[in-house]
Amino acid sequence: MNRLIHWYFKALEAVLVLCLAAMCLMVFGNVVLRHVFDSGINVSEELSRFLFIWLTFLGAIVAMREGGHLGMDMLVHRLSGKALFAAVLVAQVLVLACCAVFLWGMVRQHALNVANIGLVTGISLGVVYSVAYLCAASIGVMALANIARLLTGRVRPAALVAGHEGGGA
Image (cartoon, rainbow, N blue to C red):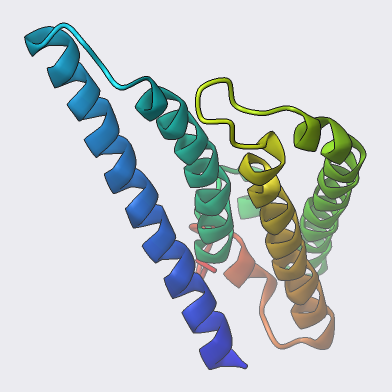
């Protein structure tokens, strides 16, 4: 199972690299075309915007795994024992709840996204925003796993607080 998870995140990182490289090439190419040849490729503007959406959502998944999301943890750093355990547990439950609300909102908006298309590319926005389903599900599963690990004692609460003593996810 750990190998499967490892390869899942390696695949996400590879897609992130491809999205960023494609965005850079398209935007740089368009800048050169506009300034040198007084023309451009309209499709590249829309595709780079769509790739940026994918880059953002996939990056959020990888950041969750690495404990790289921003957090207001001044209070949590001062806690220890049961108070730290409770704070970390509540934080993970809130992350799970946010993922559930996000996923519910995406399901409710699905018909609207599928019906709309990109003006230049003709790509359905359902395809573009499908990465949000993956993001909500992946982060939700990670939060659920963190909750299970906390409740069974397989991880110390401090390990789930970035920058905490012995911390880092």
